[in-house]
Amino acid sequence: MTHADDVTWMERAIALSRKCPPAEGAFSVGAIIVGADGEELTHGYSRETDAHVHAEEAALAKLPADDPRLAGATLYSTLEPCSERKSRPLTCTQLILRSPVRRVVIAWREPSLLVADCVGVETLSADGIEVVELQSLAAQARAVNEHLLQ
Image (cartoon, rainbow, N blue to C red):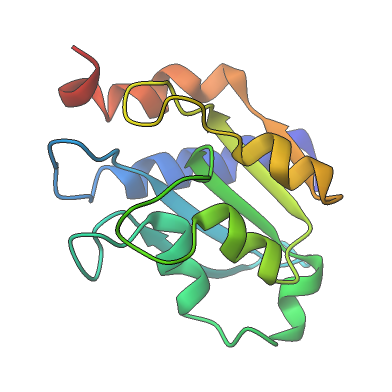
């Protein structure tokens, strides 16, 4: 996929993040999984199915873990996948590592507002997953979370 494709998919993920019911103490995040053929496989957003579900978790849960399309897929998330979590046994970083997804594109790194030191990007990269940060879209992704960042 080209950089232009990454931008288009991230803009769609940002639009999804606007569907999140705002919550005090939780970011509004959108995630889309796109197959190697450039077709959307699934998507999700924070608090889509319950008060604690994260966007990446919601998207991954909609596909069987052994779906062969995941091997060449890219996961787009408006925020760095969490590396620390109280509401579930697995973080989004761990869920991605357990999946066949080998490429993750984010709009911005998690600020130290809720987690002192998120290491999702570093953990994914250390495991051989390609991580791309689209800093040009960070302001748009942050804007959805102004309720937390004021």
